[in-house]
Length: 496
Image 1 (cartoon, rainbow, N blue to C red):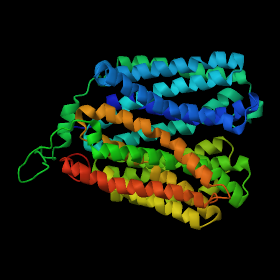
Image 2: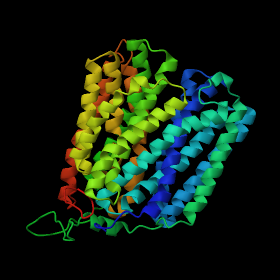
Image 3: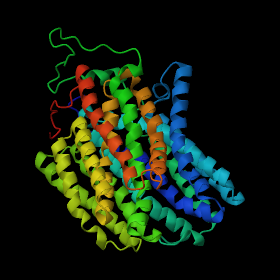
Image 4: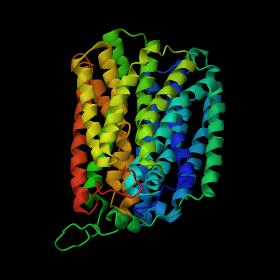
């Protein structure tokens, strides 16, 4: 398995669900002001849109673990991976059906229930899809395939709000005041139909339904030449399988890493509008493009990090490493141009992207090295933002998106490496920790109050998160090496 190439026909089908996750998550931001205006909600009540959607991932993961425990067998191993994704899509489709009675009755509670059910389906899809992305080719290039899938996810976050805005308002620039609550049901019913169609496509696709987890665990312990790498070089004994998923330090520490990663990613963007209001007196309607650039930065980084997943020559990959980030940046500029935003202030950002390219080259496709380098750069960006001011701080905080971009695939790849039969349970536990996005954001929001640290110094929360991620990069590499897994080993055809 160590030398196999990426199975593009299967992977091309798989990334459809990654697009859906981003499309829906970003579109929620369009629903919030509409619900607040038309259903007469407070700001806290309107935030239930995001809370219900993201907490569904945690609840869905918990349900997965409980069912697996009850049947004494991993749920995905029992029903199959592509069947699991199809089931998740059908569950999400049922959630979109709730939008019809919700709109008819103008019931916020029914809208929230619908979004929660959509999130439950996404949770099962993510539990199955992330390990599949890693095994659809050389496992050592798994993090780069996840970066590519993440880039597709961010394409969904880029166009989702535009499509939903047009469907609800008839324009990408209209305000929530011009919306009719009844107009929400049609685009989400269409989305539900798309879920069903893709579920059928998955059911009859060539995407693997079963994975030999023990074989994957064994292949993780192979050198490029096929020889075993051992825990004890003197005795040449392969590390034995462990009795519990929690006996693997790369997973236990990786769960915390996912918690703080999602936390710093979400909280950095969530607090940016308040920072711009306080320090630059920026009007609310002028802030949106800057927040958009933050999320586009994740797309820029993921498109860059995905280059190594392609079966291309070393020279072609070198060229793409410079082209891909700027193609992604051009997509951001085009989207905001369509939305009639002034894009001239963002041209300077093209210079900052050079730093991302350099860090990507230095990482050499190694998930542990990339996690360490990008975490340190994330800390540096936050510290510049904390101690500088005005637009320098704004762009420094936005740069965090560049260095958050590939952390999910790095953490996920390191966390489930070598888990063998516990791979799916480990994947579900990682999805469970997505709740960090809510908790870390709340912590920074509390510290941002004037009587505590204030908005600018509250970003030290993010610095602490990146510090842990840098620690995890070092610790996970050591733990995996003890188990016979070394991502520094070169793989043929990998271009490293």
